[in-house]
Length: 296
Image (cartoon, rainbow, N blue to C red; front, top):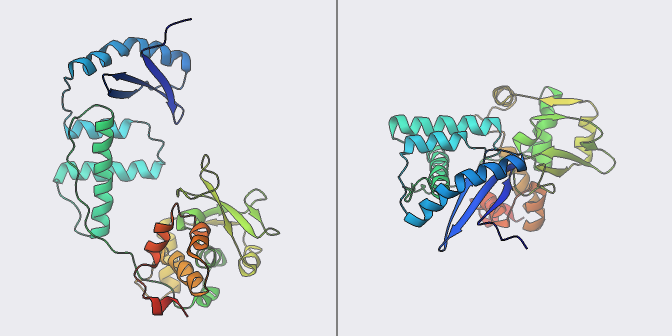
């Protein structure tokens, strides 16, 4: 029988990687190819150097600026928007070495920066990382007091989008650009299929989940063939239809959670309807509301 190879090759998001273990130490490195034959050829070439690094335990610390460049070039399987956001945050942090003062924005930056440090540690580019601490943040408390007001909003496409968020718990990004087709919309079974960034979906591979809809949404969708709004246009339409300037589109989804809980719907059911990956996320949505404010 042939001897076992001193390394293993495996796929991460269609890209082959090599993993080498020595003396309880492990190192993983991308082979930057989706072709198995090429992956084996590259692995044979780089294996001796990686093994030497593990044996001598001599690793050169990669400067953070260089680490960021490698991190952004690596194939993480991110969406285009995510790559743009991370590029902006990391480069701005390198340039100014400061973080935003707003707690929510600061925590977003911290998660991005710490993710870069963690990746560098995993890839063997650094031996220590300088993780930043997040500030204590609290969930928003804004909700729409009366969702019936959405019935008066215009245009009809915007009204449909907001109804799906406030009455079905869809995320803004799931429904902001949605085309009604036989594959994504089923009025008989009262549901629509949406693409999602969340981890609580039914189709993990293709990032899709089902959003259950009611008769009012179905009736509105009969007048709509496509929903297509940019972030900016959707926000402008909300300001045009709603006087409360503190209300944001994502608050409609929180409104759905609170209203369902008022009706006595179990938290686990609400969590699944909203596509949450865990029950703790649903509890986070309802955390700022007092018991007497939620339970009738």
